[in-house]
Amino acid sequence: QKEVEQNSGPLSVPEGAIASLNCTYSDRVSQSFFWYRQYSGKSPELIMSIYSNGDKEDGRFTAQLNKASQYVSLLIRDSQPSDSATYLCAVSYGGATNKLIFGTGTLLAVQP
Amino acid sequence: DTEVTQTPKHLVMGMTNKKSLKCEQHMGHRAMYWYKQKAKKPPELMFVYSYEKLSINESVPSRFSPECPNSSLLNLHLHALQPEDSALYLCASSHRFVAGGFPDTQYFGPGTRLTVL
Image (cartoon, rainbow over all chains, first blue to last red; front, side, top):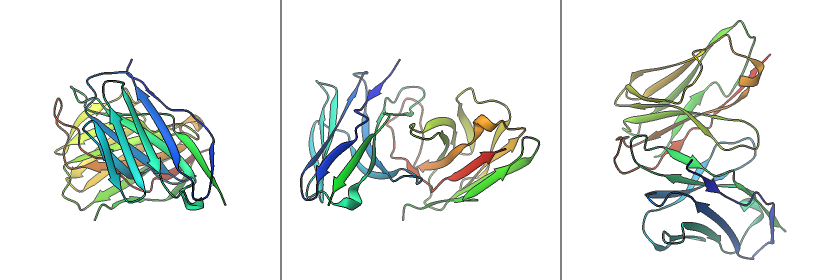
């Protein structure tokens, strides 16, 4: 059973702080990793994708991947109240089905 | 442009009704997906179409019937649904879907909020 684990939160951070969101996955053959942001009642919006070990930065967002530890994280610098949402980690294992497996999401609350 | 559109935004139907959900993308993507999402749960894959052919059916009940008329359009036909089918139905697309190949980024539409009475 392929699994993606996230802390459900809520993760509460003050405005301007760094929010750190974590995700672990169970299958070592995982190939692609995605972070989606989902506001309440809305659809998931792609924030970052990462495929190789190391860091990938895009504006205030940094994704970090460590395949040896089966761990992927998302850092949000200078957190804003508008960042308050559920962050979904998704992992694609490739293979015959080549489908995304989503974690249950972490609710982030940025306090003004 | 990474836009996937879905209609209607909201749908209320009775258990004996027949209705359809529509999804459209004009990004030249050749893979399209239907997901179901219940409150406070992650999206669950229902169907995958690749090059207008059904590639994956995640053991979805036959009261859900997908259709891909062309590379830009994806429909989900609904018939004799149950109240527990009430959920947010999400369409997504990606450049391609190749079994055993490298996974492509999926882009989601805004969803259709379905309520079955």
